[in-house]
Length: 259
Image 1 (spheres, rainbow, N blue to C red):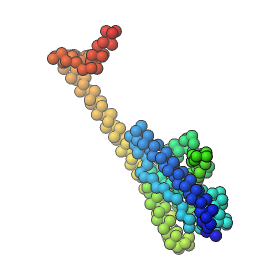
Image 2 (cartoon, rainbow, N blue to C red):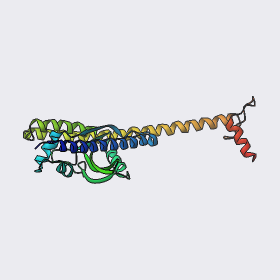
Image 3 (cartoon, one colour):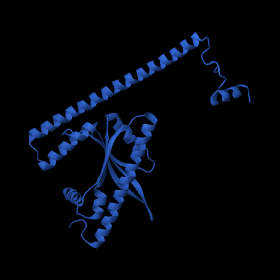
Image 4 (cartoon, rainbow, N blue to C red):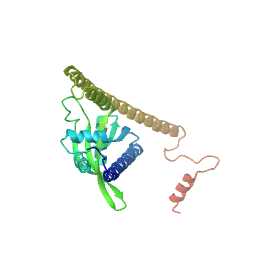
């Protein structure tokens, strides 16, 4: 049978997909807030972009049959973890673990499964960090825990995975050996690119920090020299000759006088 088949199943299907779609929105909102917080605190954006999708009925049926399960809505809920899926694309590998940790720390998110294909790549070279989580969707009659699969990977990992996916489906999982070997070689090159770009970013960040320190040191040195030329101790600059003071000056004087 197909999903849905009867009016009752259609109603169940609509309800279930509404829950999965709501879970996508809820997780997506959390990720955007975490990313914005990171920008606010560290002036750094760890997430390049976010993709989300719901599996189509055809994909759900194929995956259930491939797993040897009868095509029913209960089986769909029990055996499929990626009906609702979010993919987070990061700049660098360390960002992946940082984002995964931030998601796992959310009080209403429960991590069910973690598959780290970065530390343990698949034989074909596939790399990504997978999390299956549940998040409560609050309906009028109470919360419903709903599963979402989260994939976190770098730009290079995503580029390779997208190409591998196209080849896999073009050959229906039976690609020629030489193509699989070439894909594995490309995965190794993507990994080298990730490492090289991260090293370059670290070097650029270090140079920027050193330049900022040098600029601040030069600023302080110039301030000291100016004070010495005017015979004024640093931190005790005279009030302007016109007698005008800022609000901060007035407040400071009143505070020193004990008013």
